[in-house]
Image (tube, rainbow, N blue to C red; front, side, top):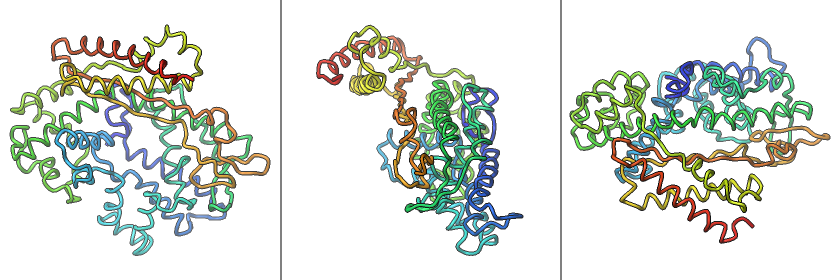
Length: 440
């Protein structure tokens, strides 16, 4: 499976695999482990050290096809059909729930038992699930500065060709030290290296709008979700043939019995691409149309509500006087209110519309003095502090949100009506915000 799902539709070289990433996480975890257990030679790590390396290699084992895109497809199906959010179907695509089952109940679990004993698979699964947040070994796999993030912060920009962001992994590795405090052991760097950690947080932050949340990638993910939701609706009705599938197709078997782990393990990227031609021949014209559009790269267009809001706000003298943080708060609230209003208007909003939103913060501060495994620690003046306590950039609490409306351009005049309605509502909501003194 590809590490970045549909990202290669935008970045053609971003075809690296999740397996390659997992090997990279293992390699980075091994380097971090050598800081935690510097006396070890020839791979004679402690039991927790071995569990840490196994967890690093298996941390993504529960992801289905196209990673989070398939989870979002199930969420869309649940929303469209009024299914309970905690249904077996939802649980079957939740990688955090599936990973422990794979680790403990498949041949992987048996291999882990052979390596470390009967309790070893449970130990590995617990590290991935971050059950012990004060364990330094857990933090190497699941934390704000873990092997997973350190690997993809280097790997994903490299393969996608996004050269504007990067981290100095080797410098960080040379400067990591181990501290011990009331909250357990933890990794930290001294003040001379904290700029590299600051660069790490900024790199992850900027990768989201640049790469992970690219408008085209998100658009394809939505089309995939819509297609899968419609397919599952036919399977639920016992009419999978109308979706172009036979009764024993892997998707049908998965939907009918999501608790069966073997059914879930069949769902990878290649299954979808190998089935796409069946969707293109489906009797349901809606499935057929979306499948054809994905195959021919004829994607749904979208209106960027944030961009349109900024255009309206650009000439507002009150907005101009605000600092960047306050300005963003107001514009974000305006975007949310505008979309909520539009969704209530049946003459504009229809099934052909989809609201895509995603908030992202630069860093989640803990500000625990004395160090903590689950925060990014810096030593200053003999004291261990959260990076948010000393870095002006991290302390800025920078964040962004996307607000986009994708729509089916086959619906006559829908795009024009949407844009006009967005601009009108932005003016109204912006005036309301300022009139209510939100800017004060």
